[in-house]
Length: 112
Image (tube, rainbow, N blue to C red; front, top):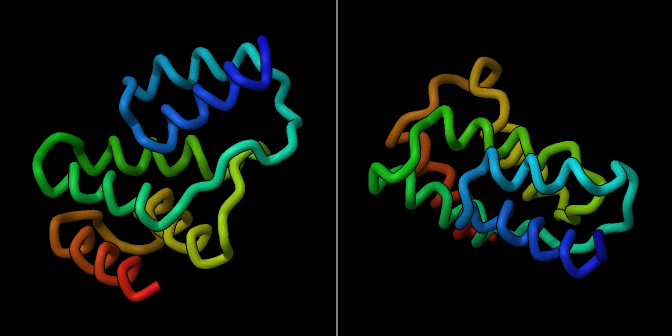
């Protein structure tokens, strides 16, 4: 369990290239507390939202992904990115997540 392994799994989480459940199982092997090792960017979120729009991911997948990232100490993010992630992780507070909302979030991310 090295920092390099942890960083690679975190990158897989941000990009959602590997099934989310597999990434979360792998990350459970590492201690909870950690310094920030990777940074979530607007582009990470935009890519996930574009995959949703393409039908590769469901609204539940996007919510689950956002929740998996939201409270991690080992992932850095700007205040703006944190706000967008919170919105995606909490659809009951911010309304149903659908194509229109995904497009709005992508536009919001582009303006940054």
